[in-house]
Image (cartoon, rainbow, N blue to C red; front, side):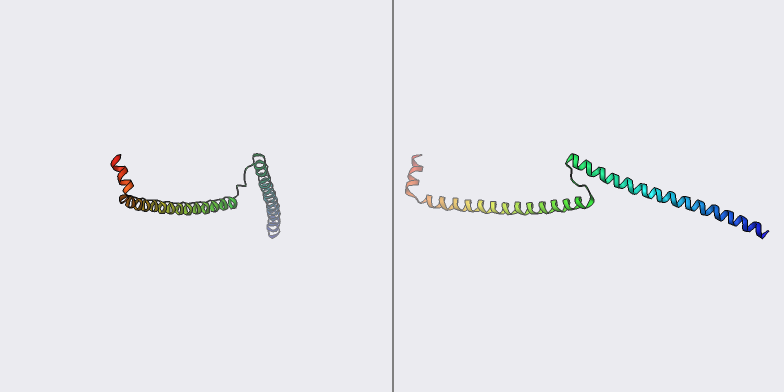
Length: 118
């Protein structure tokens, strides 16, 4: 009886080992095929970018582009604010100059004479 059990144990162990080895070989083959397919995909993407003159669309490049655009927006907004302040300052200066000129012209006899004629 022990011999029969031992023979069954060996037979099952051998069958299990064969199945495990076959399964491991299939997993290794599938992993190699997946790596090959991924490499082929990357190569095809490069070729498409070269053909279409597109940029690299990797996550790192996209994040760098976003960061660059944010910096550009920030600098543009700062420049806009600076120009707005300069414009307001110039408008105030023009208004002050206009008031001063009107004040001077108010007491100018030639200007007063011209206004009477017109």
